Length: 162
Ligand SMILES: [Zn+2]
Ligand SMILES: [Zn+2]
Image (cartoon, rainbow, N blue to C red):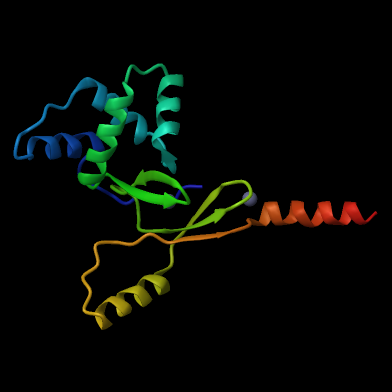
């Protein structure tokens, strides 16, 4: 499931190129990095570095492990990706061109359900104002069991009783 995209003026590639060029010591946008940015932005997902390395390899791209790690850090810094701590895993997802949203994470099947809530955002804004707190963002992950896994569990329990 994917939320509707937010209109942006630049492609992720161009935005990243601009970011690299704007560094105190400008950096070159390498071909490996370009392939990686294209690959990452082809589909909205929640992924960790190891999963990305695995998918990149399966797609036949020649991108080294070190480049993946370094590029992920830069993409976060550039505002293209955001970090998401899921239990012990450090995950990433699109930030640029993707709306603010929250997550429901199923502890059984691992699926992440994304949702948007203006009420929740208003409540958080109010809390920040009350504390004179200048927010730079937030991450909310609600853990539990999704409807499908819950149904499967109930069915199994019924079968066990027979
Ligand atoms: Zn589930
Ligand atoms: Zn998400």
